[in-house]
Image (cartoon, rainbow, N blue to C red):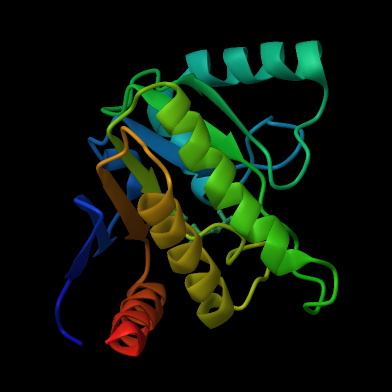
Length: 190
Ligand code: ADP
């Protein structure tokens, strides 16, 4: 520990883990851990809407009017408004219900669908927060493995424009858990 950045290379793409505030990231897009109504809220969702301004909520409302609530595990994209990131990808992670409610598959889907949407829009760099581990209660150690495995698999198996993925962890405990999970996964592959 003690480092504040951990990084690996997968298929010529860079995956890094940093501690920080995702609203300040300068990647092409940042991902929002939204809820199905796309109306903003607390946690990282509130922070993104506050920093990005009303243009984000305006587009979210149009999306919901057009296609209804966003199902868990799916993703949509809006402007980044006043953010450094040009776009925000809104995805909905699962609420933790003990582990027997398909949470891992739904969390993996949230990461994968966000990455697919970034690639479909020819974006090169994506930042993620730790989806579902705040108010939604997903245990951080389990969420970290799902997140990192899904990102690594995507970078390895997809022909994609995405060349940089950053996991931006807000607090030092979450940062430490993700860093340790990545070290273990890289170690396991030898
Ligand atoms: P969820 O409802 O998906 O659990 P939360 O926003 O409650 O989403 O929490 C997800 C994670 O985002 C938590 O680890 C929380 O500490 C973190 N978080 C909160 N604000 C920010 C921010 N500005 N940048 C990055 N991560 C943040």
